[in-house]
Length: 485
Ligand code: IDC
Image (cartoon, rainbow, N blue to C red):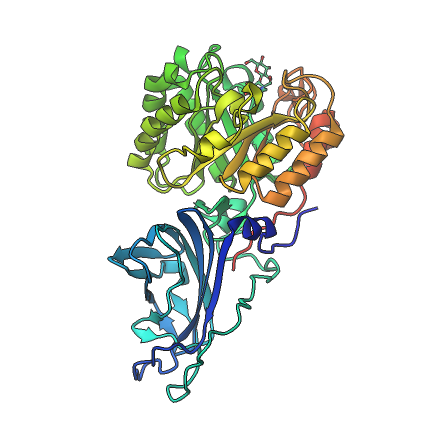
């Protein structure tokens, strides 16, 4: 069962320095302003960790309706910086910050609220700003100019965003992409265009060099409308008769599948499926060529996520980081706001399968913004110790399960329903997005369709499914939780 959205306790608890501040009347008396004498109320909440934080800012307009707004505030400490914002355009000069509304949230009726946020960094300390302005009017929380400001700040009873998911879809449609729009990393989460953490659930293709017959209008319609999936991972092997044998041809196949996902309102995860050899540097030049092409082709789309290396193995984290720091700028040059996922050591196990753990990433993260880290598991092979490490890592790092199986790591064997359920319950609880291996009719336990399905025309309903397909379709079909306010 999907859970009702609520602020993640884990997220709050891990922070150590949680700041919550509701600004009502402040020590700063409002300037007399005929347009909006009572101004605005601002709630500023942070999750902070050593050197970094995520801020959530709710702005309530208490003055006349506005069409376009700019929020202004100053950081109390010179070391505080906005790194990356969402739901507004942020600018910082010295300690002064402005956040300007976007087209979809610029209209604020009297009494209406909107939420924006940003990731930031800090050095000596990270106090909340003490005064905010909206279109130049000081936000006094609705007190009249003659009301004396309180001497103590109000209690930290910032109302958490407990609003249930809306029953009416936002304008633009009901597909996952129509609702969530351009995604971005916020803190350790994947957030939608409203700055709310979401989880995407979907399926991975098998190798395009072997199973292209499985990806057609009927099968992708089934994924979107029968499975109600949010995400298609497009798995393009580089070796094993993949990309290296025909770069232009495989680039085209990937582009076509991204377009097919786009038509159906699904997110597309472009997987540069390195596996053997395990050193991503072996394919660095190919990766640059490939990602330059696909990021240029899809730059204007809002539904494309890039996975730059599937499963590095037998190499150090510093090698993977070096690879990532060379490939990410190639994508960013074309598509600056796309989320990028970086594979981790030991077949994307955060190092665990080679005796390591996530500390190596936490202590030496990739030097780039708006990125996530991949974690893979096969439920019949990887159990409690892997789950524990993922949960530990997910308190510090934005994690994305770009591939997992319900079976053993060979891709075969029986579904381990108990372990798979434990895994998916964990991912749901942590709002970690996932893609299951595979949406194909390969003759192996991990495939969702019975062998031969892709040579027929029917992909819907339970009769074409394997045990793994049945299990996954049941999980993925449950309602999404995509908050819009
Ligand atoms: C497996 C396929 C199998 C294929 C093999 C060869 O299921 O049909 O013969 O690759 O490359 C991974 C990899 C993924 C593997 C999968 C199962 O990302 O390519 O697919 N797996 O072994 N990591 C862990 C397991």
